[in-house]
Image (cartoon, rainbow, N blue to C red):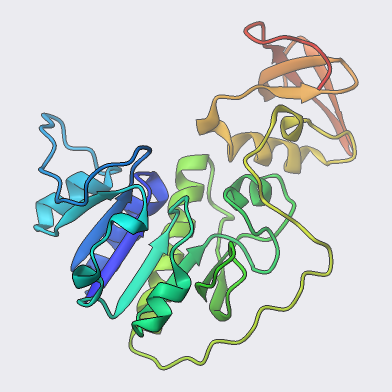
Length: 274
């Protein structure tokens, strides 16, 4: 029995849709829930407008059992006995690795970076910023975050990607393709090497939206384009100002290594230095 464990997000929804299109339909799906709740199936949402970015809607249309989950302690042992494989995509809490291992359950995690670089909850923000290559990795789950033995990884082609929605989708589709390739194979996991420079992809703070004058214009514009869904302004240290709508015109000058861009001042947040 194949179980997928996800968060209700664009990455998870796209990943699930793609593996189903490739012929690997999960037997059940767990979706992260922010509060402690009983372990029971969820009923379909009443939604008048189809939304292709929702995990629950897509799974209900396929007739796949769906559960909301806060803590693994709520999952009965008899349910675990049915499982042979778990694949995780964006679930925010640790799985009980030792409990699963004792039962012989294969548990894999899908991570959108080239591990061991950019372990953590939000690697796509940092690859969009240019801190690492666009890539996905599938690894066996251990007791820590994103440190388990590697199964396979692949680069993600993002040259033609022009916004964050497409950027997320490109990673999820490549991850699904990589996962489906692995399903039929007997790949021996290999331990992760230690990163040359320790990097942790934490949830970004305001300081992480700072635009560096050492970046060229292409990197600056790409960072802004690939984080547009977050609706967060960008800090210009030389002007001590928050900006948005960055391009060839605007009231705030944004120096880059190879020229100057301009941005419109953002008035909805404090202009205090980050």
